[in-house]
Length: 131
Image 1 (cartoon, rainbow, N blue to C red):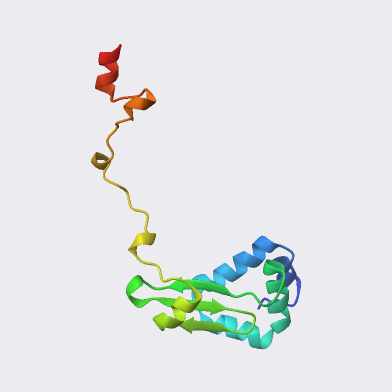
Image 2: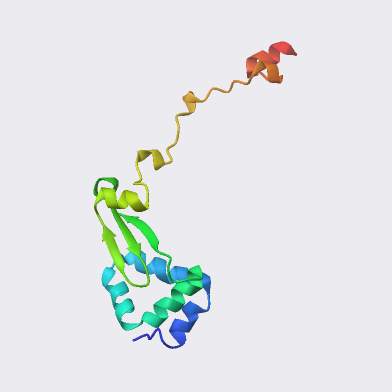
């Protein structure tokens, strides 16, 4: 078993990148029990981890989980992992993502290759005529 109080924990705490990676890994697992266990069993490690990442212990990490129809906002602090499901409560913290947040490829036919004539540029056919 790996102890976060020893050399393994020190590897994480010595690097801001590894600290964020550790927390991102726990977020990717989406297992509240792991965080609750750390908070209960090793609060000093959590405080050091938070201080390494943010410089203080009051900051909260927010992340969305699930899809747009079943949005959950998870708030992680040094004290808890809280799952917020009520839309009005979510909106108090962050806007809820909608389809406008997506990057979609536009149809190429929607983008004509015309240029303003007053800029000295024109379509390819017109530029041939001008020569």
